[in-house]
Image 1 (spheres, helix red, strand yellow):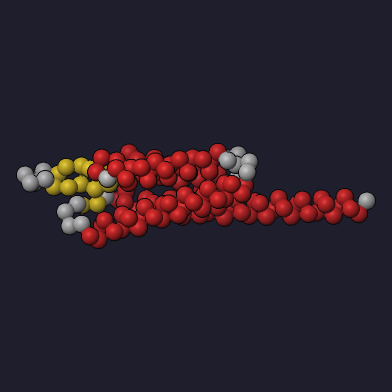
Image 2: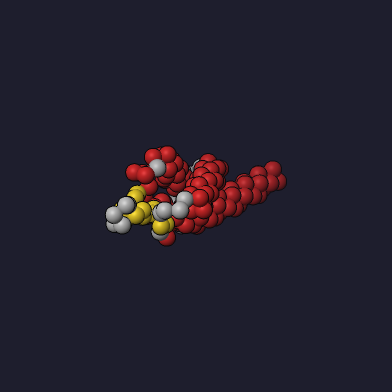
Length: 143
């Protein structure tokens, strides 16, 4: 399981999702001037749901290492979800005036990159398996 490169990419993506779940998204100053920390799931419940879906997809694609086609599709889907999250965060960054965003906001971009790298690795492994099966079939028919 761990000897394939796409599994390592998905593990890195899962770690980034975990970091994103437990860190601050942004801080907001209340009227007294004190900074109030806001977490993903408390401020935007839909974003917390989307983050849960992303975590589920990444973990599911991490454990489906025996089915390369399913792993490739799940990795691509989780990369698309992460790209959508990044677009939503970019929209929030450019439209809202009050909050001060933290570095955690760019993590969906890294998740997206690692998920697409994992999908690419699963695709390459599937091509290698198919080519080995063709070679075996040719040897069978020659005998």
